[in-house]
Amino acid sequence: MEIGRHIDALERAGLDLVDAAEKAGFDAPVPTCPEWTVRELLQHVGYVHRWAAAYVRDGRIRILTDDEEADAVGPFPEDPALVDWFQAGHTALVDLLRAAPADTACWHFLPADSPLGFWARRQAHETTIHRADLQGAVGDIAGVEADLGLDGIDELLMGFYGSRGGRLRSEKPCTLSVHALDGAAADGPHEWTVAMTPQGATIVRGATTPADCSLRGPASALYLALWNRRATRDLHVQGDESVLSVWRDRATIRWT
Image 1: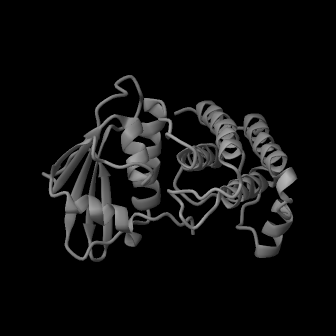
Image 2: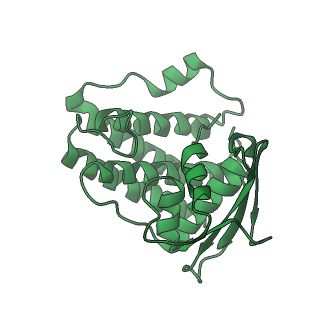
Image 3: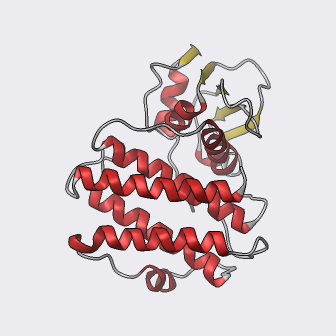
């Protein structure tokens, strides 16, 4: 996806996130993030937006120290000002990314064609997934366009786990094949193979060998399922379903 489309997705997800948060109420639990209330999740995403903006705005090439990060984000407001605080940070990030030069140089933590491309992509998916969390706190979770779903699957598998596969382990070696059945007009891969071992995971684009478990379906549904934001019961699962249990138990994201 082009940077501009990632920024558009970030903008749209932030608006939908606020709508869901206001409908749910700040004290409501978030089923897909059981350790958080709506208030805490809104604080988290607002924090992340300000944190990300600091790198792009300042051309910061090294990771922020704890004190620098605290200065960049500032304190959380009281409840009456929380939505306005979130919206201000979200709007500032969207505007910053749209105005930033294509050759912006700054720190980033996953492989990318450019730092600007990384931050636009990462914040688009960060906000979209947490939009799903807040929608789940109040009702049904909306899907995403096929190309955004494909891009998000690729970021999750090749970015978070393909480059740092040591975190995704299975005591019993197993393979999971993921195949999106739509998005034919979208650029990029539609199929991935995840091999999990006691030492970690190796992930490649495409189907390399017969997998222990195959997961097939629309890109939007696969995207949310692999981020553990929806069930897989209405998707096409073939083979050893215990492999999906390994994924659900072990696929947790930490940015460091």
